[in-house]
Image 1: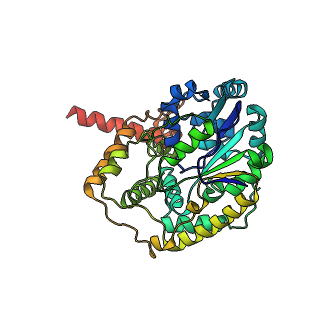
Image 2 (image 1 turned 180 degrees about the vertical axis):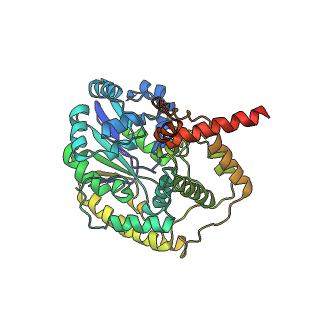
Image 3 (image 1 turned 120 degrees about the horizontal axis):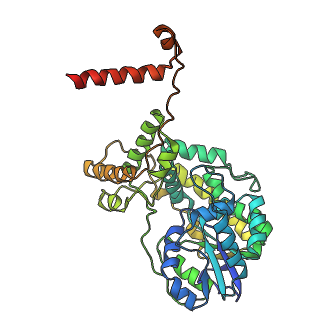
Length: 396
């Protein structure tokens, strides 16, 4: 492993850079910064192959994701791969955390379709990231309390789990494990082409400066606000209980993902800024267990041929800074509840109406009323009774 506690060296001319995540490591903010500075980057020879800040559906297509609430974009993906592979820019890049979902088979496909590339993987301390991952699950309709969710995640992914095993949906720990990146991506692209950038919790500009250094450009990236924010703990609990009620009433998962599950559509920044401060923090036992996982990460990165940028000590936390017992809020500021209701209600109003059910088949003519009644469906009988009741009311 090669290390750099300072800024990294620039990639060689003609290099191609794939930023593959991880989730909850500032990727959304970084992508907005790269997009806002695209003209300045182009002027210095750094070419972004995306057509907007984040073409998530294209990246999911590339990763081979089979989610049922989005439409694949194979045509656009083919255009992007052609541009990425044939670009004559000094350095070309593509950034999407969705790429880290790729299976081993798709990683091989990406290597063939995109050509030789450097892989950049942003990583951060595990303990605070777990709270963010739990909230991400709430947006997708999860109903599990934080401590139950934590115990499930640690149980399903023991520290000695096979890092070569396929990634399944919902495996939060495996998804963000650098050992999986080294084993699966490194075996295809080469470990020496992986760059791990450790986030500095005290310096939000560190990630931007690191990417500028890798791209070999001047300081042109600026922090930009993104819609990917964390709710205070009480507001997160309100969302969880909303998901519980929605599931109890057989709510449509697709409708949930199109509304509550779309952070770009639900405008929650104002809710968070106006709400009383109450960050979501995992309990101390989870912080201690997270540090044990991080120790395995550090050992694997140290043994590998990957490059590490930043201070690896930032991956661990002080457990004493986390609550010994998790106090789950049971009350919510009414003003904040109103702002949340408004944010979600506005998105729900924009949801297209569900298609009308096909008309009930007309029963065949019958010689007797009793036989016609026997052949009619229960739905048809109820509709006829409703029509007759409405006629009586209107005739009064």
